[in-house]
Image (cartoon, rainbow, N blue to C red; front, side, top):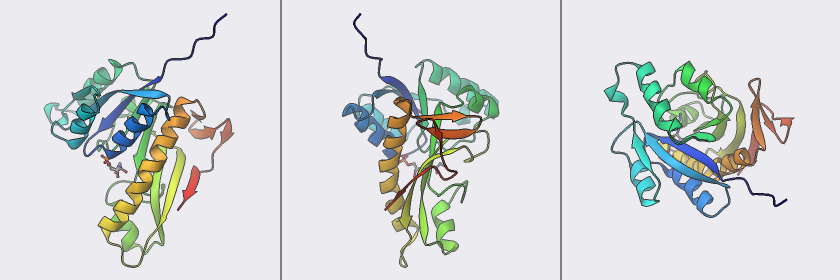
Length: 220
Ligand code: GAR
């Protein structure tokens, strides 16, 4: 019997801004480094660069504008409808700056990834680079993790660590970290679509082995 190759994974990416992480993932898909396709890019803001980039890449776009909904629940319900139209295997949050309801998170449990610009569990929330500088940290970085109901609190998959230099300001540190974001997010997506990473009872596994709390570490 002829064995048929599985279809490429269907990936929906949620953005709120520039979309540079979405773009590197799209490029890795186009080069077949990731056996997947971004089937849609959805933004909660209508005029962002992430939508423009998606259009230039020939990817379908949609907007679910959070300002048009009176409650978080109604926004999330509409976002779910927009996402589910694309029957995704994976949801990728790439600079999606909304707090999600528990219902939303539970619906996509184990198949939703986020990137956060700190070495989680350090510096959940906003202004991560300035907080690392203010604390005098010698290392900073970025984490890809499964999304859980705790904000920036799901199981870590991979972290990239960068040095903090004496003359760094927020901009230079952000840019050093973002270079690494563009390395580790495509790697994590590739692992997911290959079935190498999974979430079980809140813990992340790689090739069936539990990952350390940090996730795998990439050091510059
Ligand atoms: C990235 O730096 C990402 O780590 C951060 O938003 C930026 C999006 O950039 N995400 C968060 O802060 C999530 N809490 P991009 O739109 O160019 O990919």
